[in-house]
Image (cartoon, rainbow, N blue to C red; front, side):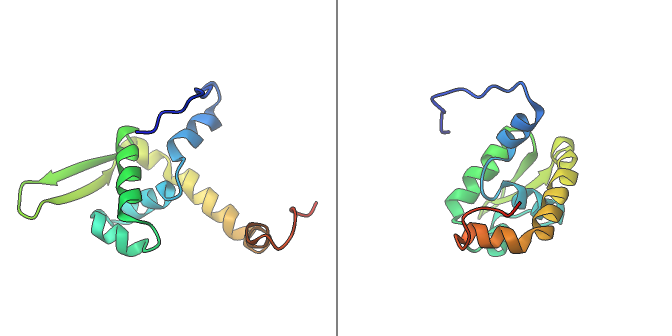
Length: 122
């Protein structure tokens, strides 16, 4: 796993939350698993713009942080399923609020992220 050169100060709850959710697809992966999408191939179909490697790395990090658990079935070809842990389920309300905020400010955020305006108004 990537090792940061400068350690984070983990004295603030928001820094801890950002640390475990840091990654483009992590909150989306947690939401997918919560909806019953448990197989990596199904997640790949839901997120076609994400590479399989990136999804595997982020699933591994979520597992390392204790947000998901992985079950490997002893069959050929190998079958893997992911499930939310209690800690992972406790993050779902946070992810839902993030989604609501993004949807509420979609127009202005899309403009900013597309580079159409220099900064947010106000």
